[in-house]
Length: 72
Image (tube, one colour):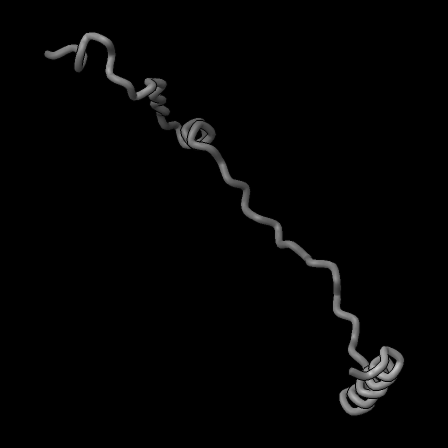
């Protein structure tokens, strides 16, 4: 294997040739511009705005200890 100094020299010469042929790489814009997004409203806020009714279910989804519940 070639000594480290020779490898560094070969690399420097190779990249110099690439820079001469293709030109130096340009800096890219590092800042990413984000567009303003439309505000997302919750179902509660939508019910207030549009005059609707919000029904919220707070049950835990488990069967009660007496079976399936009330039967009508």
